[in-house]
Length: 198
Image 1: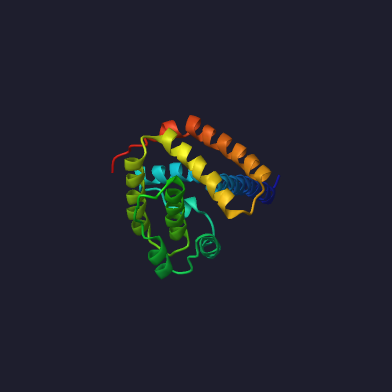
Image 2: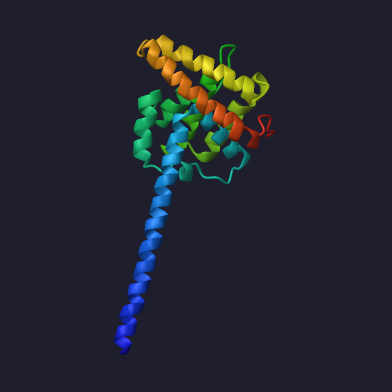
């Protein structure tokens, strides 16, 4: 075989390996984004993610929300009426009242995580508020079980109050959510101390 043949074979092997690595890495990133997207749909898992982030500041919010910032700007505006940095700090600066409940806390947590990906707040600004939110939650609830119980009650009440779902639809959604929460309590909650000190 001539040296040219060896070169061609070598290049073919390198290209094949590079292609396989690219496909695997792309599939992994897509699956990771999918799993995180699924977690974001469940506010209870979001709090666990928030606690984990607060316990490990080296984790980048931008890595977790591996999405285009313009998409996240649309998302935070659609869900929480935030279309600028000024609006974020005007509407969502955290403070507690006697009426603050599990669902309220989760919205605050979600907003301040989205805000980083949407480039409306820095990681430091978001982290400062996430700490305040979680400390307030720790003072209000004895642990994951109590917190989860109120979360489910308030979620159901919010769906009923909106009047956009039928009773059957709410019952189905609640059954699914209760399963998700139970799975989280069993598998994820034990990994994160509810009373983590800051």
